[in-house]
Length: 189
Image 1 (spheres, one colour):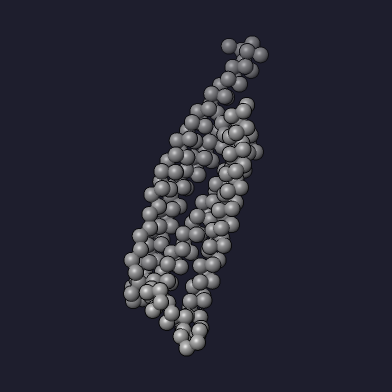
Image 2 (spheres, one colour):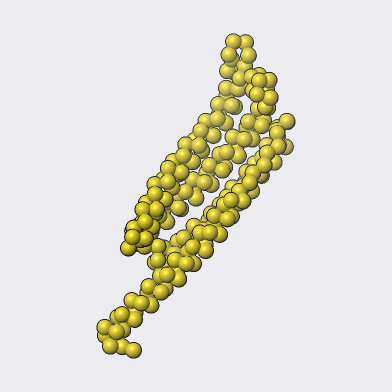
């Protein structure tokens, strides 16, 4: 029972961290929208002395406005995808805590689904971000190259899938033990 209590504490921590991640991704998403709008409205018009914000970006940061637009657009897409994934993780942890054990068939299936989503959502957002970058590169001049790497999500997703199979096996064993006890109690062979 000590191990189960530890697992439940970790699940509670996972639920809390998933909520925090979801909120952070929503904030990041909203800030990216604000960034795009403020760049569009404020970069050419906002003046600090006799220099515009766009002029500061181009000379001081050695970064073009197009690069900043592209980075913000990519950030918007990545934050949206991670917010969705964080919400799925939060739901998994809620259901695991409600079941009281990870060794439950429906909880194991949900963990397997989370593993698949942990692989697919980052790959999908990476593809969408690459498309957005390519479109912006065609529309604007001097956008700096960038590189995204979501390979860690593949490893994490595979780990979730493997652990889900272990939990499913544990649930099947537990179900078999309970069936044997019931059969013994009722005298059925």
